Image (cartoon, helix red, strand yellow):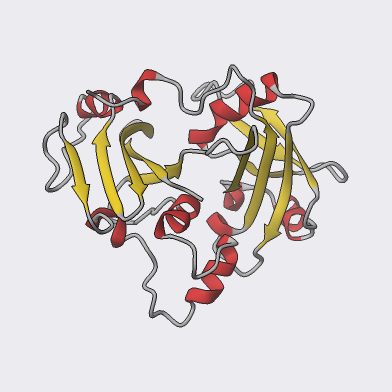
Length: 242
């Protein structure tokens, strides 16, 4: 169960993403802190979030933060059950679980959320959607529609990507086609896990949502041993300012 979300902000001029804060949930209390990435983002035009202007403060709410609440699909919408099915969660899951899958992306701003994985039984386990399906060839898109639950996908580094040294993609086995790109915020950690836990590293198809928007089309699951030398989002920009 997701207990912590990282909030990132994009500089639309450079397309660069910065982790600016961390939301956490403990029992019925919600907390937000700014990370050191917020200071980097400010140099690129980031403005403090509404009602949370102090980078050094810890903000607490007894209910989910308004910034998050308006990124959750209205629970009275008739299509909500289908939406939850696409995410592979049910109505008993927390709002954090929904945001962990969708990213809470809105057309009106340049913010995105992603989950902090939890170590369980010495395993790394995470469900995520592949990205960039709309930019793939028709042949690749047809291959994605034909994928079966449990089918293995192969993790491939995009070595000649001049914009992002950690850029990675997923491919199928036979016939070989690209099945989407790795979410930018997971790429570096996935690469670390592949190198540290290669024997147990596995990415498989969780479900294919043929009628969903492209960003919710292909749900995958990564599993591997949680190596003793691995920590998720270990870079300084993900840590608290204080």
